Length: 337
Image (cartoon, rainbow, N blue to C red; front, top):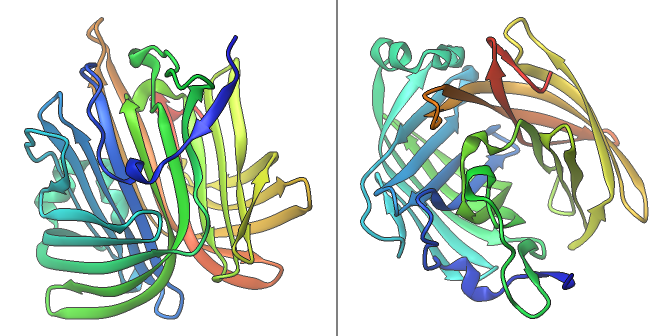
């Protein structure tokens, strides 16, 4: 068997020629939180050019626990750009500088759990105009890329069971403005971004836990537990220390849930070759999202993705970030419990 290497080039910041599979997805994601105002959010565009649409999501965590949210599937006819549904991502300098903008409406949720029933939530809450402009800069090296054979040939995978063939992440800073209705906030914060491409179904993984953490500019974490099935579980991530990454070799997350099985707090442990780390997380505001797909047998598959703005504590220092819990829902319950 050929040796496997991870390949990442500056050109990968730009969009790729899509694979021929119907479920090809190329997506970028950014989150950013201002540690002083405790305001921030996340932004995602996922191009599905072979299906003719993009997945666009804007999610803002506002004062008093409110969440501003919008999702759309705007039509696209190519994979050349990330520009759909009022959202645009620009690569200004690969691995160093990018720009995020959104102009459109936001649904204002005083009770974000209403999104457990999206149709009802959109009918019973107001929308307000929104404008976001944020400049993103990398504060860390890049982590990840595409797994290929040493001779450069791609890995083969079953597109029906794929979540992506390539994925990378980076801790970032973000400076700009968020305007919702008549209110406007200046943002000077920290966050994390990622990019992935390749075949994707949200139902390809039984469950995962993804923690993105910025304690300050010198200390950050990303912890990932991906449980594809009972025979495959990957635990890993990165620790950012003084501008360098340490690779996490093992990690654990012990979670407390509420009556609706949404995570409310957790303790995380991670180990690298150099040290061990313990981090506590407390969810400040959470929105439940879902993705549904009918399989070839006519069965409706439901995926729940719980998106929590989270206060993190490491060695007494408080930071912020996201905790994302994805679960397939079986018999009304998330399987990752």
